[in-house]
Length: 171
Image (cartoon, rainbow, N blue to C red):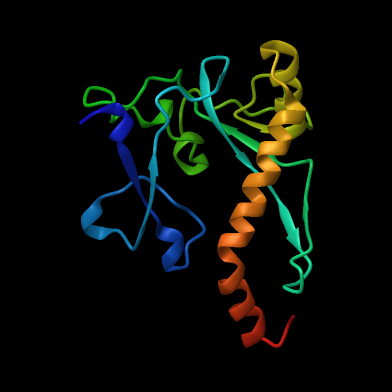
């Protein structure tokens, strides 16, 4: 299996009414979330992370939406190792799943309101600042890419959102 083709299936227990999702056994899974991994993900401090973004949709007429400049970044608890046949069980280095990582010895709880510089959960603003200062990232360009991604996601969901809104009498 080539790394660029590797996908990880994560058991999705939330589909059965639980608020947790964990890596699990395919024979008992309710559903899966499948993701193809990038061969060279962006890392901070050698750790892979994801961003949780919040979008407020105000209706389906013209789809007015607002993307919050604040959100959450969740970090792996072990230094990144590209998933391959020898590392695919070292999930804490490439899965950012909170339920999985909070049990890790490497999980860092921070008392700082923004998660600090080494917390396993950090504010989006602090991560954007770190990307700009420590990595020289063009945060404005990154935000533009994020905005386009959100627009595309809302566009892809448009018909489902319209149908859902119509079924409950909202427009």
